[in-house]
Amino acid sequence: ARSRGPGEAPAPPVFILSGAQDALVDSRGSQRLAAAWQASLAIHPSAGHDLPLDDAVWVATQVGQWRRKLH
Image (cartoon, rainbow, N blue to C red; front, side, top):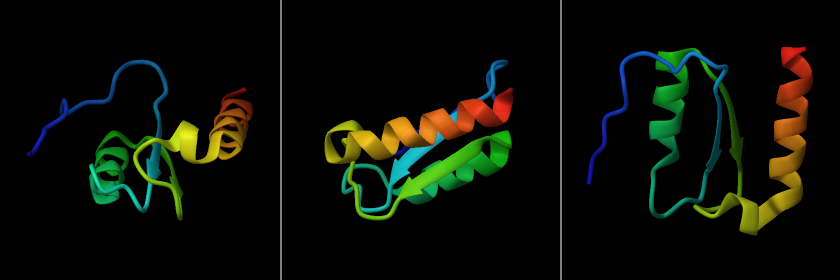
């Protein structure tokens, strides 16, 4: 299946997380979306589609680091 997101990023800052080993959604789509929206992106090298289940600490750390950069 294919999906197409909006051409413009939403108004609030956007942070995209992706798993490099995601068998459901190719992480290259996240890379393209982040580039198009000029959004922050972090890709977990070994996690799959369920990032919070695969590595909750990594997710929390990434979000915390991203939030600190905003302020």
